[in-house]
Length: 312
Ligand code: F2R
Ligand code: MG
Ligand code: MG
Image (tube, protein in one colour):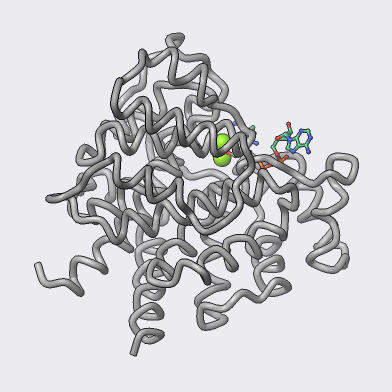
């Protein structure tokens, strides 16, 4: 495959890998590790949740604005797409309802959780298009990922989770599966040119240790976390990818079987694995049953065209 085709396949693989992870994981959200069996994707079906609905909004808005961040446009795209049946977090619902009522796009997020802002993983779960579009410009990636987050998540931990996830997607785009070393990947993440809070630094260090000396699954879940807070879900998504990077099925399966915020952890690990492996490594029969697979594919193609246009 030539280089351009390979790159396009990575864009499509990341977007569709993210949507499939979300859809597969949705059935098990909130269950405890060890208390359930993960059924095949074909049995569970491909209905996506808020994770993909918000990522769709990020894609649509970036594409409409030539890859630039337009806060008002993106916030209103989130509002337009909002379907309560997709299962949104309460902070995000409150922000979107206020924007719908006419509040300025960058105000309501500052007010949730008694004015502390949200540290939920709702910004990280939707950020994959930023990691793809700016995979060759990491300074801009950090700036845009942070801006996209602040529409709903102003707490530093919520924003940092999104930056870390976007950076992981970008590194995965740039990585070659034939020469890949998980240790190099985690060391690059640890030297991200951006100030991460100590909770993230410590968890990245744990992942580094795990790659040298693998822990039990229980220990990884206990130490990294599997819940709705960004610092308790972004790290394990990264770890689940690095644990078996060339096996798309296993990355998603391990992300779901760990329990907790299964749709979101699988959505984030699926975005990284898809960006690493490309669309060809996602089973065709999975793509066929995924809800709105044509629309997500088309948006991923448009994002790729934008990326190429920006380069030339
Ligand atoms: N909401 C869900 N799942 C529950 C409903 C699913 C059910 N199957 C259904 O069909 O209805 N999942 C989605 O929510 C998560 C993303 O949430 P987001 O967008 O970050 O929302 P929020 O409310 O801002 O934050 C989530 C929770 O984190 C805690 N939290 C955040 N900041 C806090 C702060 N400053 N102080 C205290 N707590 C804070 C709160 O518990 C928030 O509710 C994804 O899992 C997505 O799939
Ligand atoms: Mg969800
Ligand atoms: Mg979730």
